[in-house]
Amino acid sequence: MYTVAETISKRIEEMRDLLREFGFKQVDTIEAWVPLFLFSVLFGLSMDYQVFLLSRIKERFNETGDTVGAVTFGVASTARIITGAALIIVAVFAGFASGELIMFQQMGFGIAAALLIDATIIRSVVLPAVMRLLGTWNWYLPRWLGWLPRLQVEGESRHGRSAPRPALESSK
Image (cartoon, rainbow, N blue to C red; front, top):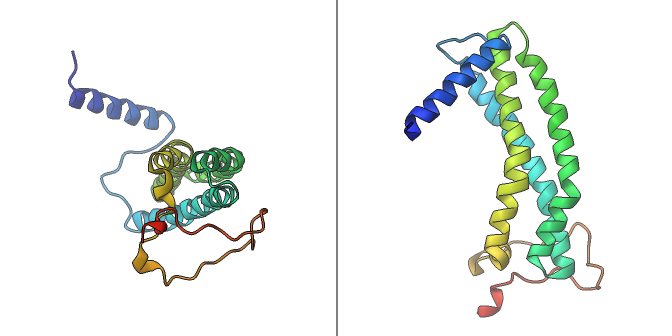
C-alpha cells in the first residue's frame, strides 16, 4: 500500500512523462520573467472573471435578498461565458506551449493550466461553495468602512428601491 507522499510522487512522475510525450523539454531553471508575467496576466484575467461573476450575483441579491438564489443565478448565467472565454485563451497559450522555445513553453503551459483551473474549479466550485457557506456575511461591511461611497452602475433595482444596506449593519 502506498503512502500519500509516494502516491503524489508517482503522479508527478506520470505528469512529467506525459509532458515529455507532448514535446516539452525538462530544464533546471525557469526563465526569470515567466513568474512575473504569469502573475500579471493571471491576476488580470481572474479579476475580470471575478468581477463579471460577482456583478451578476450582487445584482440578483439586490433584487431578491436571497444569497443562495443569487449565487445559483450568477453562476448559471455566467458559467458558459467564463468557461468559453477561458478555453479560447487556453487554446491560444497552448499554441505557445507547443513551440520550440523553452521560455514560451513555460509561459504557455503555465497560463493555460492556471487559467483552466481558475475558470473551472475556482469559479464554478470553490467560489459558490464559499459564498453559500458565508450566507449574509458575503454582504457585510464593517461600520468603520461606512464612509465608502455606494456606487450603483444600474441605478435602482426593479422594485424601485436602491440596494439594501449590508445584511449585518442593522445590529448597531
